[in-house]
Length: 168
Image: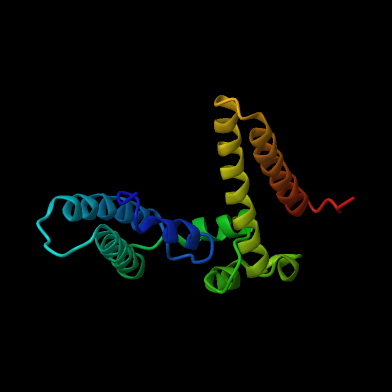
């Protein structure tokens, strides 16, 4: 768990802030790995495992934030094209949105609470499917069926939201 500590926020914020680029992501992965090694093997008397984890998250977050703010920027044409194709939401993309110009249905799609709900449902669906397969492998079929049903329902919910298919 400590090896990836501090990268989760980066991977989520990537969709809400244009400054997070490959350099920031690579920095986060390398620093989180090195920080986890340090906090695992360094002689730090009085440091509990959860304190070491928090320190690793803080170290990684500071490192990728510095790289995102002062490191090389992604080419504006690449960002504009990405914005036009994906339409990431939130105020972190305002500079790119202004560069790209208004798209026909921007006002309808830029909704942070809706995006966060989609993230939550997506994570819930993935974990439900993973646990469902695990329960099935251990012959706990009622729980396997329940978990897989939750996962499929979550995916159906997301597909309807993305494609704009109205609920029945």
